[in-house]
Amino acid sequence: MSQNEHTTTPPSETNSQTQEPSSTETTIGNEAVPISTHPNHSDDDWEAVDDEDLFEDDNFEENSPIENNGSSTTAVVEEKKYSNDLGCSHYPHNCQIESPCCKEFFWCRVCHDNEAFTKYKCKVENMDRYSVKRVKCMRCGTIQSSENVECENPECKTIFGEFYTCTICHIYSNDPKRPIYHCEGCKICRLGKREQFVHCYTCGACMAPNHKCIPQCMQSSCPICMEDLFSSRESVHLLRCGHPMHLNCFRNSLKNRIYNCPICQKYMVEISEESTRIIDEEIANTPLPQELQDKKVKILCNECLQRNEAAFHIFGIKCPNCGSYNTKQTV
Image 1 (cartoon, rainbow, N blue to C red):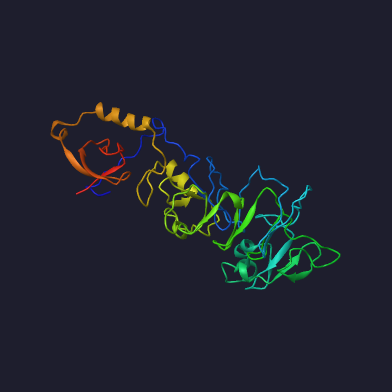
Image 2: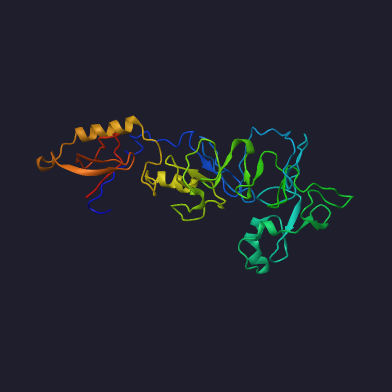
């Protein structure tokens, strides 16, 4: 940090009441999970549907109606035990897809991306999910068109995805506790219930209705690890300022006592009045040397963005406009 900058972080956890984001903040899902509003941000909050670790909703009703928009279908869920003996670690289903690049069969696109080079020397790192033309029923072995939602073998008739089938993204799932829907705006499938999210064309992704809009924020990289956010298979978290980052990157930042958004420098979490009061008391109880007691400095507040002149102290410089200690000295 240069000598003309001074930023103040909240007190340590022993004194501070800094909390994880409230339930009004949002957490995003990637290729398959839109932004949710869960106060306890689980590691499943926003991952891609055709990818790993899907979002789990214990309140999802098993008797869902059929939703058919012409090519993306949610099958009727009857009260029965769902097949989980077939499929991959990403989700259970009953067919394999043929990769358009290496012409080999895999359980899903992610399986191809993880295994194709090692097994078949396929140099395509990200399989084109939209170009799949054939699938193989793993009950009877029949190879057939990817347009089918159930096996064309009259003696088999296995439903490829007993709970969900998307013939656009070629995603199949037998798990009723992992609701999925296809978003025409995102052009991919997302985890969650369609009615709980809206596609925000400003942000460029499916978001909770109460999110803060930042133009094309989801078409960017995580400011911590620099990995892509929109297609990421890791959970994505929206900070209170509206900027997104991976949930794990957010948690690791807090563990390392980094409380400021790396993009705009606003606090990533709400700072309690008690935390501010503690800093006030520390400043009042720690007088500076006489030559510094009347020193005034120019500051920029990262919270209200106001420029002011304020009293200098080594423990923090308080914004006279909003009362925040999230300030830095300016020239």
